[in-house]
Length: 608
Image (tube, rainbow, N blue to C red; front, side, top):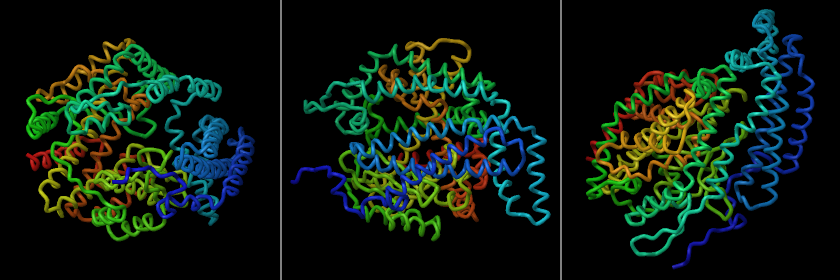
């Protein structure tokens, strides 16, 4: 049997790679846009201090701001996607770094805009838009409409007026922001570059390298000895550094608290959620609802223990499938057909855009040496989104294709409906389209399957989505809430207090059917998302919203598909709560989370 070999980038077939020429037909055009951005940045600085002169100056400033950011976005995406094709390529390493530096300079160049807008009295801004209405009435619609288009952009800034300080103080805090990133940078360097784990052995006695990348795959293996040894080995290393990692976590919570207070927020949670226009009540409601439905998770753990035939269920037993995984592999052509078939309920126009992406090289399909790991959907406002995959032909790869194309079509609808400033959707809704696609796909696969083992595996896969996304991410969110509240009260966070808090949460979330091993108390110390405070809850809320919407689609609720496409087209033209209300999903109430957990219970009962 021929040994598996990862090919080089040069060996990739053109048809299996994304078409970056759609973004820039040549690197000469890239260089011209880079020079153009430099010129626009110089010109933009000359607008400082002119916004109070009248609506014409304001419109000119905002038009330049939009064009400058739109051009830079193309540069940044191109440089980084070329770098992701082969991260060992020195040319594109340099291009990516230069784009990063240009972005930093762009942020500094535009830093004056928000404070200056906020110095304009409300009456003056009102008079600017009043002049637009008068121009409209006089038939001078072009310029009037142009300024009116920026009204929500300005409102997004002015609604936070009480939290924006004078220009000098904001400039000082912006410089201090680099220092505020120090805990995140320290953790990243430690977790990605410095930490090392000993090799571990399975039941066959063969030593295997344990890394951050191999850890979860080891926990998914049938060999329980390997799972236990990997689990114990990984956390024994983190335990050696628990005091250092506790100090880094504490420093990060302290910096979040500092910047929130300086900007007159009641808490760091309030500041983090306010950026996306999300009420704090949504966060609390998620935690309360999940805690109310913890008996479902306990019941799932009882089923897992029984199906795996274990006397004791340990923390290292929860990632391996409860049932045997079907040993099927799919070609990429087969994967595309499966995804097309599963997404048929979304209608012909959705499928036509999906096919356009399949046919016109939106996707970089296969692994090659140096290629960025994982998968993502990304792209500039134009011409279209891109998807990076590392496709190996397993069922999980089929789901990844559906997931990432969900993101891409969300971007396509938004970019083709909204002007540039409102096309980018908020993180709160970012996982809705991708998860909705997965839910539709799994339903179709289960409906078509005649193999009982395959059906069991699909249910196992879906149940795990609920465990890892709704329950686990909410547990993370609760840990963040409790620890940041402690900092807000002026309490110190030590390794002992963090370990104890995390252990007790695991005990409560998993219940009495689980042996909550002492080692899991160190898991908080390896979660990178904690260095972007109050981010992870959005995985759970997004998943809940997606399940609620997919359930409506599958039950053929009248008009839901068109409403869903209106949601996909919304970008950030409304706040995320109002966008989801288009589909009849109100995340300011517990109902969508409850409805998603009802689906979890249905599949759990089916598996039982």
